[in-house]
Image (cartoon, rainbow, N blue to C red; front, top):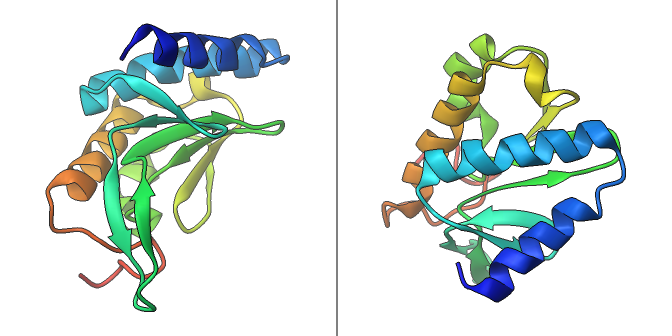
Length: 143
């Protein structure tokens, strides 16, 4: 990552007012970097790693981070764009969390198993960057 990208990620982390969320973001930087072997970049309000290209059945297409997280007010959100359903086995061992279609919500990153979280991110990242996954989470449960 260039100096501008590094400064943008550092600036994002510095703006997190909650000490817990800031600590969790700093922890996530390490987990995500180890899992993806990529350097972080800001994608709007998301710290993203790598990218993949998606295309909806409607023909709409675009690029998105292949892995990412964001410090939100009530939780740290970990994005697994291949869908949380693909990771049920690991999620059962993760620790306290809730999920959406493609999000894992963590109220306290230190309360979950960091190795399991890293495995989830690594598996999702690999799926999204192997060149065969082109859907979004809602569409990708059967490919």
